[in-house]
Length: 287
Ligand SMILES: [Fe+2]
Picture 1 (tube, rainbow, N blue to C red):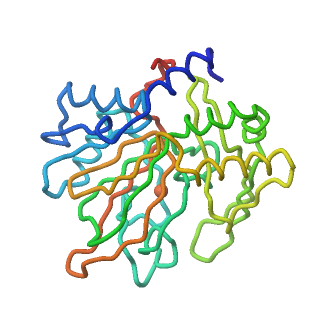
Picture 2 (cartoon, protein in one colour):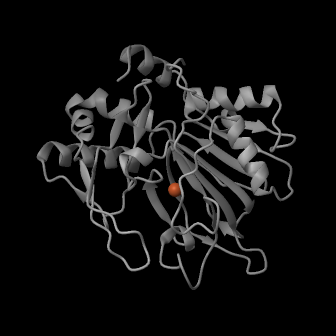
């Protein structure tokens, strides 16, 4: 839990991000300067996210890992569908593993945080999306800081945030699909405060493969949460990552619009999920 909620709330509400506030230019993403690194960290401290613009040349995965490490992101969450090393190549897959999973299609993706189905010891706190090739049309992300959502809910009714902090606010059903690692049912809170006073959020607007608690308080809170997200809340940003750009964030809420590919140059995004938050290294929250 956070020491001084009111001070934290006031600082967050006083800093509504515009896209320009998030942008940081990187001359050589695999080897950021101290000033570039500080600029990324400062944005992630204030807004939980930053967007970098690198040169329009293909980055290699070693450069992406070096950029992440410079920001304290080192523990990659292995993905059962990742092509090799925990950095997933998101592109439309017509066949084979992943073809039936929505990130590997061109369909729109509703609000979620990444890894909402992970067990607690594998909570995804840091996330990088790096664009190698944008779609011909579409593929826009909406971005929203979960801290702002928490504040909006708690301002209206503290019972809502309390309900969403319950350890069984929702449950991910047992997984028994062939070819995937079996797992037992996984109850989970939506909001958790870590010991350093940072908030993490697990959420998906999807209704398949998630069972929300039937408790009336949780149901009211979930409806309120969804109404806020549907209402274009202040601080929501829409951005399409272009080639050489990337989002570095503390696993903020995001969506993706559907897209249309140029078959000769299909959309390609690298996604890296980390157990660490960006650059916090355990220090207490300071805005
Ligand atoms: Fe995602």
